Each structure stands twice: as structure tokens, then as C-alpha cells.
Length: 179
Image (cartoon, rainbow, N blue to C red; front, side, top):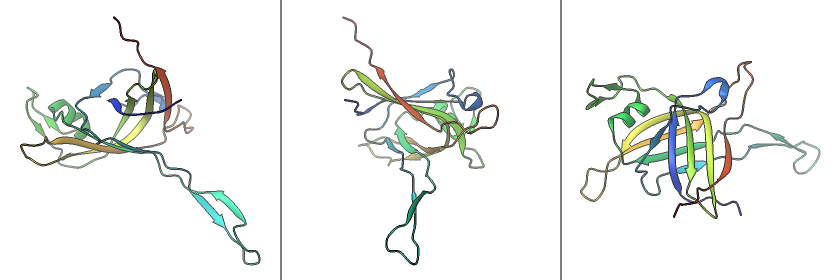
């Protein structure tokens, strides 16, 4: 059975060349807040065509498709993570982060890997995602402030300008623990 449960890791990287997933530069996002990760890959919308002289739907044509979307929170509010997602200003000692003066959407590659289930892990890859970030949760003693980010897949192009797949997934074998 190919089933998916739980998030093991989320990784971000600068986008690759020609619509491909990057092979280097990955930054793992850790301390993912419980139940904060959402993902939606919506189905193709349908355009129903009706005609005056016949009852019901005469034809169904393909419509627009919304892109896959995702969101997550990380309790690791590090300077590096903030800068990766906000693209702000970091002091030379990397101990202080200042938000950018102009809000922007940033393009990054993203990879989600599930926890192992029946010897397999699900890996969702988005080569170019439009990502925005924020900070959420309350300043309380019973919780943590989180770095929040959300995004949606965009359709990248190859070297010839031809559209390539905006996302893909695979199942990989889980590593067998030693011992």
C-alpha cells in the first residue's frame, strides 16, 4: 500500500537550472510545529457547456487549475531561517535580523519527505515555489513563537522556454536501521 503519514523533513534550496530540482544548497527546516504542515493539490476545474435546445450538460472542457499549495510552521526562529524566507538584513555577526523594507514573494525549491510507512517514504518535490513568510503564535509560557511560511508551485521552464512539471512525487525505500 502506498500511504503517506507525518512529516519527517522540509527542505528549501535556491531554484535549479532549467526547471530541474536543485542538487545542492538544501537547507533543512527543523522543529516543525505539530500539525502545522498543510498541502493541497487541487483537481482540474471543469467548464460545463450547456446548450439552449438540449437538457443537461452537453460537453465538459478543461478549465483552469490552481497550483499546489503548502504551509508550515517551524519553531526554529533562527537568523538563518528568517533570512532564507524573508530575505532581510542580517548583521555581520549573524546575531540580528531585520525584516526587508519591501515585502516580496521569493522563489525557492522545496522538498517534503514523509515519515516511513511500511518501509517507504513519500517525497514531494516542487522545483519553483512562490513563498512568503511570517511569524505566528502567541508570546505565552505554554507555547513557542514560530516562523511561518506558505507558498504555491509555479510552472518552471526548460532552456528552450518550454513548460516543465510544476511538481512531482516519488516513494523511496526507508533506510534500514543498523544494529
